[in-house]
Image (cartoon, rainbow, N blue to C red):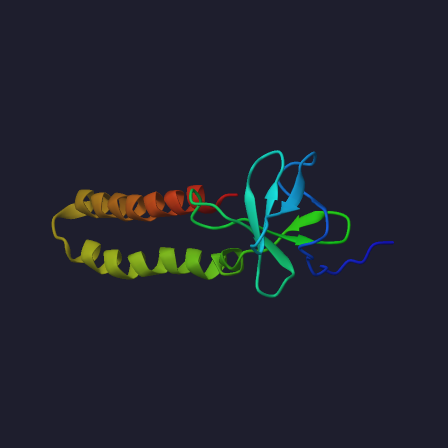
Length: 136
């Protein structure tokens, strides 16, 4: 039975590619990196030796995996751990700013409704962009 704890990654051991099942990770000479023989992606072992990180210039966050002895598992990013406080603050802070402004505007319910719609749009657009960026 394989262990349930992540194992330290050895640069001299043969591993399957975490992106594709049929690819193999091959050590890159004179570096601390490994490359896949199929997808041509380059991976670096993190300093602690327990996580493999994909080198990428296209993503704002780098995919990371941990070796469990027989398979790769996706490592939790720090962003996912702090997602709830970020989401709550993204809702509360604009409400603190927009609500007093909306209540000070005179002349009826129509202006108040416009301010509420603007506040909702200001909340939704950054939240949608944030979701698109980190939805993986």
